[in-house]
Length: 136
Image (cartoon, rainbow, N blue to C red; front, side, top):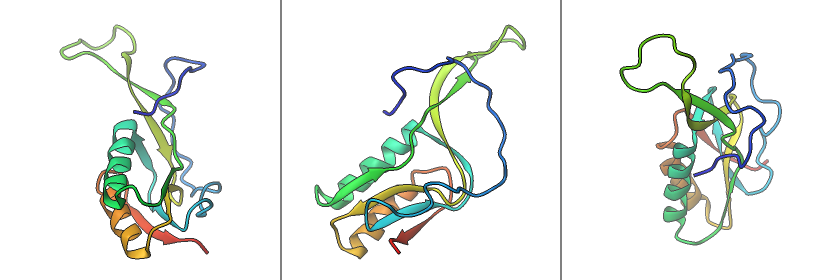
């Protein structure tokens, strides 16, 4: 799974949302087809890996896949049956913070129908609503 090699701070605040759409990474830049997030949310490293596997199995070693997001935000979790207080929990997993309009995955080198099907399978693995887009 994806995770940073090194982080400046082991545990960070969850932070809020600005409510605005993505201003960077909102266009298909590398491939011909993309999967665009239609809402903001957190996508875990496990979800990214599951979506990547679904796509690569669908296209059967044809074409090329670009992953445009990276899980660099550590999320903590306290142990089961731990009473309130006693500090912040330990780092459990990493997530990518995604804004509406961000391109999550890109594909190239395969027909449009195959790309749409591969990205549809990948979309089922993610925690945000998405849509299939083509390069302009």
